[in-house]
Length: 426
Ligand code: GCO
Image 1 (cartoon, rainbow, N blue to C red):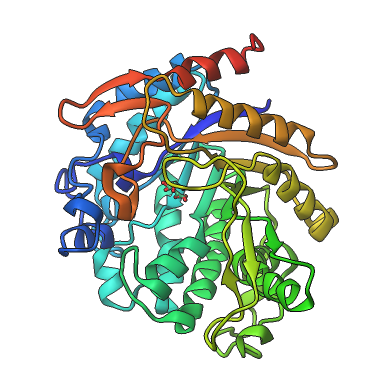
Image 2 (tube, rainbow, N blue to C red; image 1 turned 120 degrees about the horizontal axis):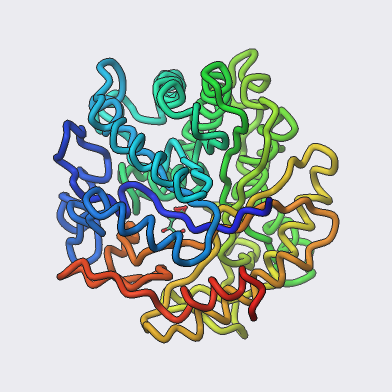
């Protein structure tokens, strides 16, 4: 069965940050630090999904979707990141999964969508190797509770974005600006993925995936310097996270002046390269890269022009999804497991969101054009307008409009279109 779904993430929709024993996460801390998030917005209330989840699942059902990707908040399950389990936190996801199953909707939980327990960050966060082991412990706790009903699990969401925005540039929580010194965060997340994959399977999980944010990389010209810069960017954004998982080795990082990374210990790559039942990819747009114009990084983002843009200013390039899928197949061959598009979507303002319809229509068609790739699911980002990280509530990615003053939900034109598209009526 092809999975047609929509995706959300705990901190972006749940709210209820102080309820039922949830501990603080790095995003609570970040949002409450003045100047970090646009307009001072926080996820304190968000879409109030923690209280309105039944209504939200009814919206998933009403769109004719057969799958729902959501994330589990680690600080609800283990308020201090490790140690005592908070049953009330687990109960919330237990009820959610029950209702999804009763409605015939496949639950697809992600264990880490960036809301690290603050207590773990205080001990170094993903810079600390021990966080990988704590993540596996947490995965085991959740699987023991849910794996009788949840078959498909996603370990991490977009470890690239979490490393770069969270630890290299500091525009996301935890707000560290370590530049290339953030690299251990890649390895510790990947190690956490591998350890968690084992823990999930040991506790009843049938299918284990990781979700990587991937982008086709376009050199700004055919000049060798631009091609080399594009290759360096491709290594950082795509290969650093796909190669260890699929091939059991890191790509050549010499463009970054890095030889054998000192933080990789014997046996780590075997742990990271656990057999996968699927690769989740999130696609938003390609990236155009030129040679650097100063001494810092070995590339420069040259920007993409000549395409329509979303309200976020992101270029709309549907065929980039076909290109990405085919390039994964070309690069990994038989090592590529079935692929699930675990996020694709766009921000626009209107309720009569014709641009979103055009975006989704174009991307679904591009996915269906991809040759030689076993694509088994497509999840729209997102069900609801929600807390868009550093942008606060200023970017609306939902199929359903949310009035954040009243919490009223109103399905947009794209919601109705998607239902018809899945049913084969368009
Ligand atoms: C992600 C994202 C979502 C974002 C979306 C739009 O996985 O990138 O996690 O949380 O909201 O990508 O930027």
